[in-house]
Length: 373
Image (cartoon, rainbow, N blue to C red; front, side, top):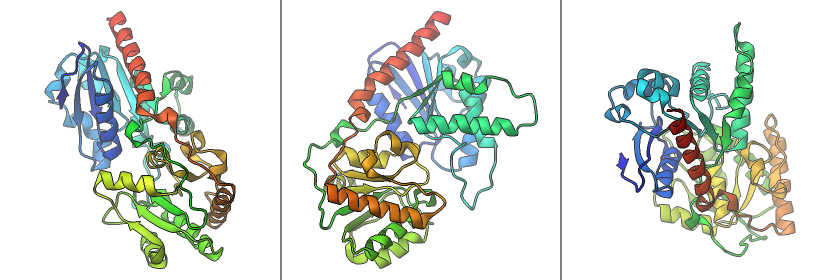
């Protein structure tokens, strides 16, 4: 896809696994920064192992990679080191690697075999890039810690200063939240029967089993609530969802994936409290969107949530003890209802606020590339 833009400087954006959040970020950048002339290549979000190793081969004969560019932007699912090796023209083109996630901290499901290969792709790509941008500080830190742990397991000849080199070229610029989502509404928290929203992918790492335990604790404590469970569904999903629907059916306002964006945005503006039970979340777009729309967050005290969820709204994290964590979440919810927690929109994550950060960094890299050529 090509977008002519208004300026003379050309940027090629490569999305190696164009999942919904990756596509959204890619399209946002193009819309936010019309001063550049954009083109993009994107691969469908399937065949994970093939994508993370095979993108350079899939794009081997791609005409766009034969053209001159002022900047290359690649997502973390692109084997950037191999790509630059196969296309010598790109060796002197500034390259930015955007880390939506990192394989050092990505959970391995029971159906997968653990492998260091995806981690090595991330490592080589980061070393090959001129700049590495992460969507959260937690994503950056978990990557650097993971690379350090990986290097300690390698048998010999690991270069010194690797972590410092990566840290020096790292930046944090989140995926922006669209300005249109920010709603100036009064606090809608219904203290007698709050509307709880759980809006994550229907996968095990988002903690649906922990959501079930949390709701069961609320029921045991006679805390009344209404419930909406939405998010991207898959043909195979954790059985905890069926148990939640069966046990709490009288409380349910909305259930399942909302296909229309307008319907989803309306739900964000109607819910009182957005809940996370996630064990892994590299930025937390679903929580940020809901917070922008006026929801009060309730999230575990871990991951990227520590960067934008107020302390009052974070419950104690007990990753190894789901029962204890459910009790802690219920304690926090009751405390929030008692104290009347109010909306806390993440203003610093607004697209209009972050556009300048992206623009400045891209121009800096382009200028550095021009000076060295």
